[in-house]
Length: 422
Image (cartoon, rainbow, N blue to C red; front, side):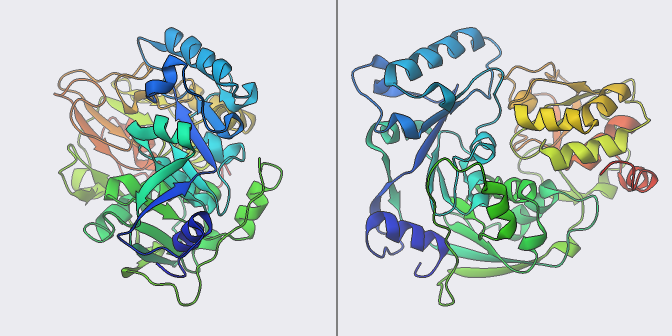
């Protein structure tokens, strides 16, 4: 992996060049845990985290039953470990662990970021090596490093221009198709002229798909947009990495963003993605915009644009869960939340929301229901009854379908309010 962004980061941390297939111990810069992260032996209080100043905790799943006890228990753990209070993103500062580190300057270029949840690769949008430590997170908390079998890297060159009204979810759904069988077990590195035209929101949403295609992580290159985003946020020194001209990749894929079309995937994970037109007219009873793959400001702007001066269909429960408190505040400032509420959308507290049925959310599917959602997964039972159908798509399709009461192409709605909400 000589010359790749991941290879350079690993070489810095390991003090030498590394090769695919080699087992290495990699020091991390930050560990992010959530209300659902297992703390293992650390919870017993006999051991301390390796560096309290480099541990952050987000409250995002908001467990439907155990939330009060979890909140106090996690706060007590942080206090006992000497983790600074400002590193705790509890109720009032809360949001999804794949957004908070970006907003608050904890995921930085050239860093190694360890996240205690499956979609931690999202942070790779900020030019860092972001790894999901999952069940072994408490080991990383104690030692400050992760064991890694060095993977191959795959290059994805982004060309063309994303059509108006399209967002990260459209790109990530497309990547699940083109990278199937190509990226499994690898680190995907993005390049190409289209990168500079993608907002940081879009990059985060794209990198979020790594787990869904079996990739270990994804990394975007640094550019002026990223450095401007980081300015004033960074919590520690950082050093960006660029791919070198002689970077070695196991495979190279070119993606033309201009050719991406809206897709609907479902009702099960095994179902192939299909154009919206193939499911047009299929009735729904629930609609959801949220989870770590969506509900950033770009997504909320799109939803507000579609529902403006309209009303949610009476047979549909439409719930929107902003990805973080900061995003919710910005959406309120821009008038997006007011527009949604006026249309009959239920806007909830930030977090993972209805993406998983154990989370705090008013949207819980019953047997026989059909839901369109921007969630990351749609396996049966994930959002409630295992007899409910879950279709994954982009926020524009979700919003338009919620208005029509059936799966609907959003283009007519987008054209009507083409310049209504920026």
